[in-house]
Image (cartoon, rainbow, N blue to C red; front, side, top):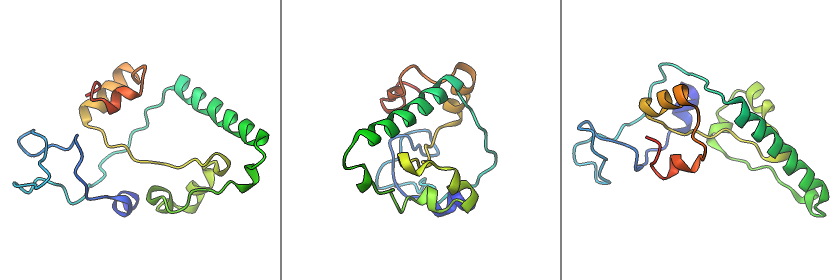
Length: 133
């Protein structure tokens, strides 16, 4: 809960809906914009094939940096709220040499259920284009 509270951003997004199910208007005329969230349950849904692709990409980044003459100038990104709020043992798990960070992605219960039952879409771009509810 502490991680959620420390990284909460009071922002309007396309996917936020009001109490009547319609998309929130920027002015929030009905006061539907949430002030925060309370974590009730955390589920981990993992696609082992996608995870292997992620790991392979980390190795490719490392290899490209070994070939790069300016790789000594690499600086880790600082000030990421979702990382700064983590307990130290969790922060140490991140791979700094590839600039790995944890980011939140809000999803509706329907989307989470669909991913759990059907897997991730072939193109994760589908999440950004609204093709995956």
